[in-house]
Amino acid sequence: MTKYLHTMIRVNDPAATIAFFALIGVKEFRRYDNAPGRHTLIFLAVPGEEGVAEVELTHNWDPEDYTGGRNFGHLAYGVEDIYATCQRLADAGVTINRPPRDGRMAFIRTPDGISVELLQTGDALAVREPWASMVNVGVW
Amino acid sequence: MTKYLHTMIRVNDPAATIAFFALIGVKEFRRYDNAPGRHTLIFLAVPGEEGVAEVELTHNWDPEDYTGGRNFGHLAYGVEDIYATCQRLADAGVTINRPPRDGRMAFIRTPDGISVELLQTGDALAVREPWASMVNVGVW
Image (tube, each protein chain N blue to C red):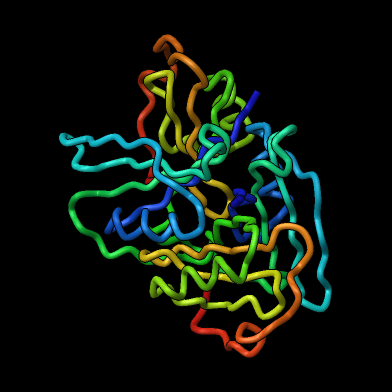
């Protein structure tokens, strides 16, 4: 039987990306340094989803300026409290590109520009300030 | 608790992408047409992984020429028999960009250029022809 393993993204600064994902509850649990290949592979997952749905970070040791394309859209995560999650992200300096005005959906970007969708698990939260009046920032 | 939901990719030809994913055992199980928004969302998963690890296809009805960037790498799936899977793909006209010379790993691309890694589940298969002598085609 086929089995989903992971989505791989390339990162320039693994520590920055790991700190970003930690803010939404996704943690590092495995890494492989490959010195001859001059890269490191780092696996992240929500605790309990290791082996089920992972994100693989590829860090090529020789720096590259990563940009995105339109064929890839985003990674999506359900979160318990979308306001609390977005507040934690904003406090850490992450731009909330699409604030959760509707108590249901937000978009942010990793340090290398990978779009991440956050969806409130279950019913949308009650609409409330300051979120309801926040404007979009950039694209996502 | 945070929960992984899906990876979203944009597709120009949903039927072609659905046919591609069917070849590796990933099936459509839900779709939403949004006529005012002029797009369709189609959810795919390995049967049994619905709600666990999904791929969301976004089909914008107004055509766009999708290209990729370097920050997104690939989607990865474990498969039961990497030779049989690659044979099925090749028979359907899919280019095997990185053939499974080692009985363990292959790369292909969706019709819109999303890179997909196939990994043999468990131990690598015995190295054998015609796979062992196949050369790489393009990038992935």
